[in-house]
Image (tube, rainbow, N blue to C red; front, side):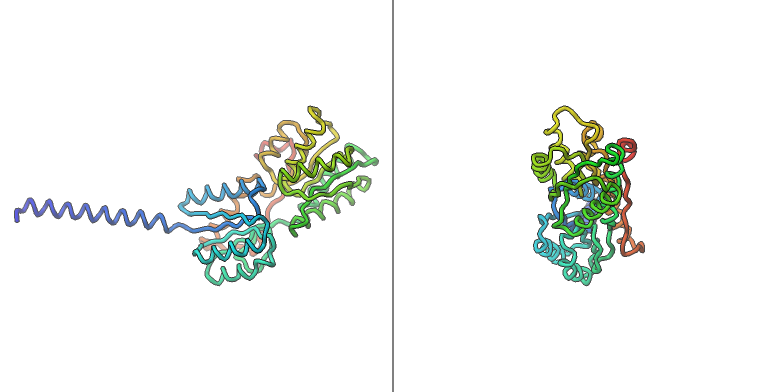
Length: 319
């Protein structure tokens, strides 16, 4: 065979081989990233939805994949979702438990399969680590900030207070109890005239409109979360029109976009306790902790989150 022809054929074969190896490497790299399952209580809660979006964005940037599922606050559904994560071969499961006791067994099964289990907001035994809030203390902070404001505005006379809680979820009941205890201790002349459940904006709006019909003199609203606070703000705007009385205020947690806008626009949100920071900061924190654990970093079983009171005075630095 002609030497030039042989050389040409060999070169072509080498190029084809290189292309094949490159294609295989690209295909392999597309599937070697971590597979992360994220089990959320409900994506109707704005702060949780924003946090999920940030985790997904961070994972994608790193070549990892996040599958987010919403159990609509049903523990049995959440168990099924975690079982599906195990069967599908997830490397990591991040879970916001509806009922931590109900998912202990299935999370134990995940650990047995070598899957990292990150528990968000609850202290669980069958987890790699728990990213948690002292929920009673968070409630105390909300109630204390509200009580201080009540004392400043109303002195010994006190005022009528409404609480938007969510006793269906144990950790949120702890938070609600902290609010009530702090109000009783620090503003004893304040009277809680209504207590309604509200986890998202729609429930907060409906609950607050109902409360205002029965108790139009309510001056302070304490909420266990940003969803209820956003709804309460809309209800108060509807009740007062263009006026925002200086002695009416909402005190809550979760630094949502709606809460930030309410503060910046001079509406009814007076103080919010940021947990770690805004939704982006929270998503970043849990993702970074998870990646650190996957990288072999040792950490305490319970990793506690920072509580930061935010008012209009320090809002800009927290956004």
